[in-house]
Length: 130
Image (cartoon, rainbow, N blue to C red):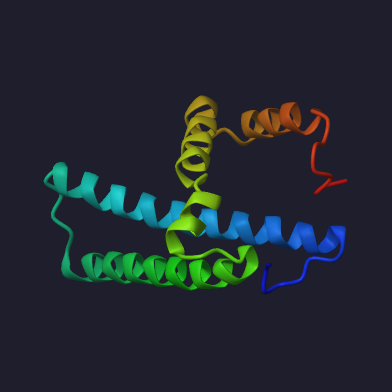
C-alpha cells in the first residue's frame, strides 16, 4: 500500500504530476550528460567558469533526481529505486518527443503552438486538464 493515501481524483492527479516531475528531472539529467558528451566529442574547450557551471548543473540534476526518486518511492509504495525507474521510465520518450517538436518547428513559436493545438483537441483519457 502506498505511504501516500490517494483518496480522490485530485490525489491521483497529484501522483501523475509527481510522476511527470520525476520524469522531467530524469530527462534533464540525461540531457545535461548528453550535451556535455557532445561538447567533448566536438573538441570544444570550455573556459573554467562555464565548465564549473556545467558541473554544478549536472550535480544539481543528479541530486534532484535522487531526491525525487526517494519521494516517488513513497508515492508508489515501490520496493526499491529500480521499481521506481520501471514506473517512471518515460524520460527518454519525453526527451525525444520534445526534441522532435523543437526540430520539426525549427523553434518557431507559431509552429509549436499549432502542434500543441493538434494534441489538445484529442479526447482526454485521464481528465487531468479541462
